[in-house]
Length: 120
Image 1 (cartoon, rainbow, N blue to C red):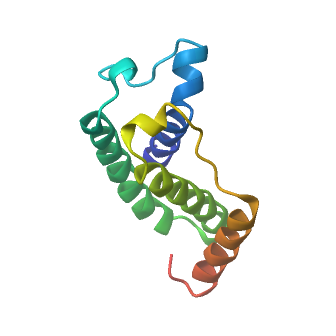
Image 2: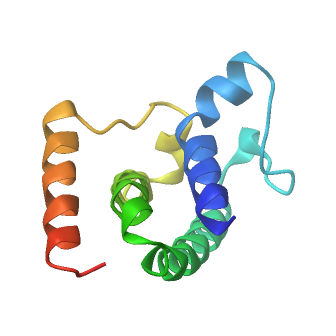
């Protein structure tokens, strides 16, 4: 559940511009995206970090047949989150953060190496 929550919150932050400005949606009820501040962003990021931390504990307990794929998804979203985290709050509403395809391939390789070495 915490992994799903982390994924959703990362997607909500990544798509805040389109969801809020184009569709009129907001997924953070306590946050006014019209006045999105550094403090608002940091509060959301703290929640996401807690979700990721708890999710990783669960991933480590998964059977080997599931762990590899779930960890890859976790790792991709973790890297995406870190990229979002480096942006100032005002940039969140002006650009959609993406992971380039070459970096996705590198993430897949890194994730597989960690799995093969039993690091996860």
